[in-house]
Length: 274
Image 1 (cartoon, one colour):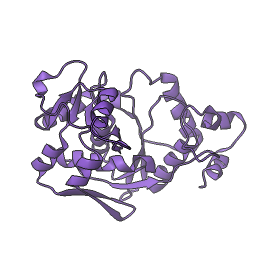
Image 2: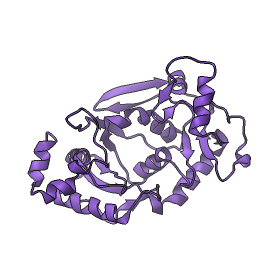
Image 3: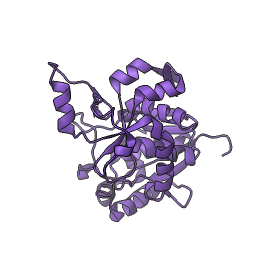
Image 4: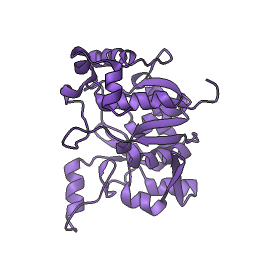
C-alpha cells in the first residue's frame, strides 16, 4: 500500500447516496488508499439517519476505510484558525443574492456573470473592515489582495496529468471574492475542504466534474495557507435518461432503493459503467 495515492470520498449526510455517489466512491477507492470524510457543516440539513445510511451503503459496495471517520463538525477550531490567518485578506459582507443580482443588473444588459458559486460578487462590501462584521454577515476573501499577497500572476493544478492554469485576471473575472464563512456555519465548503484534505494527507482528490471550476479556489487557499496542492481527478457525472445530473432528492436512484429491489454491488458497478 505504500506509495499509493491517498484518496477520499466526502459526502454530506443531507440525503441518501445515489448512483453518482457510488461511482465517485468506487472511482476514488480504485485509485489508492481510501478515506471517508463526513461533510456536515450544514447542521440544518444534515441528519444522523443519512450518515448511518452512508456507512451502510458504502460497506455494502465492498468499501472499507480507516476509523474514526473525520467529521467537519469536529473541526471548527481548525477552520477558525484558518480564518484568523486569512483575516488581513478578508472582509464582511451583508449582501444577499437579491442585492448581488440588483447590483450586477443595474448597468448591464444580457446574461449576468456567473462562476462556481453563482453570480460573480461585484465587491459592494469590499471597503468594509473585518472589525465591522455582524452576526448576519458572511466573510469574503478579497481575491485581488490575495494574489497581491502571494505575488503570483497565475495558479494551477494537474488533473490526470494535464495542467490547468488560471491567470489572476481570469480568476477575478470568472470567480471573484468567494465566501469563506457562511451565516450560521462558521466556515464554508471551500475553506473546510482545503483544510480537511491537508489534515488527512490527501494526495489525489477524486470528485465530479461539477466541482472542476471550484478547484482554482482551493488551490488559491492552499497557497495562502501554506498547504500542499494535491493532484486532482475530476470524473464524469452520472446522469438520468434526460441527461440531468443525479440529485439526492431523486430517491428512485438511491443505492438504498436498488438494494431493496435486490440489486447486487456488481449490478451497481455495471449501472455506472465500471
